[in-house]
Length: 318
Image 1 (tube, rainbow, N blue to C red):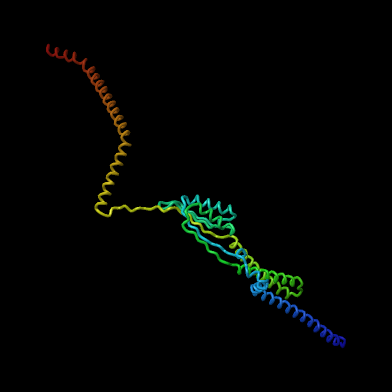
Image 2 (image 1 turned 60 degrees about the horizontal axis):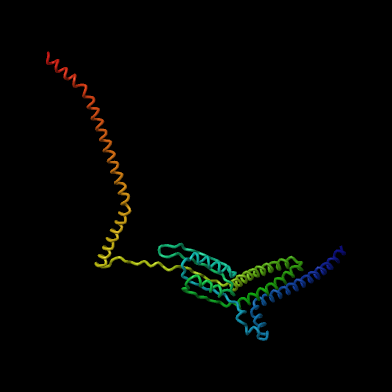
């Protein structure tokens, strides 16, 4: 019994020592992780300032940045009058694709009684080839309006690059700590932090890709139309204009009547000839029928006359 009482304090002291060591290790790991997270957050939040400070300290080389190093988003619109909008749209697509660009949107309107149709295209043109492509597009017809606008996003691009670089380094360090972590709480904490950093990194990279696409490919909205059809209102507005309109209408009617008569005259003549021929044929048939009828009636009555005469003599004799 005494042995068990003596062993308990030793085990208690050993447990206290082990617990102290584990607590110290946990505190050290927590402090290092917190310091690392804090350092990462600080560097992540102040990435743009650090980048600017490094640029200012680099012998002023970035202070005299050339125009070619700037990141510009160029957008514009071009309105043109062409003879055939659909055909001109096909030519515009060929010009843009030949320069390495693409067409993001296209819409067409069929010709009507008021215009010859229209076409609208959203063109994405490589920034270095923008001027050459615009010059080729001008040959499709008459340019009614053309305008461009540019937005300088150089600082935004640099800040985004710095944030992505810092976040990648922080993610790699957290991944390294996770590889060496043994305590379940440390593993859970590091995995949550790593997942959050990776999600944010993917979001920034997607934003970077979108920004790079806008910078590398300029956007031009091309509108192609024809000359509008002018409808003149020539309705009479006075007595003389009404008289003139009526006289013109009469002449138009007479002209149309003569044209119709000229078209129908051959048919009327042919119909009259056919009718005359049919009438003659009917008369011939009737004449023959009448003759045959008369002849048959004469042949029937001729043998009856002697009998009638004989009867008369017999009656006389009696």
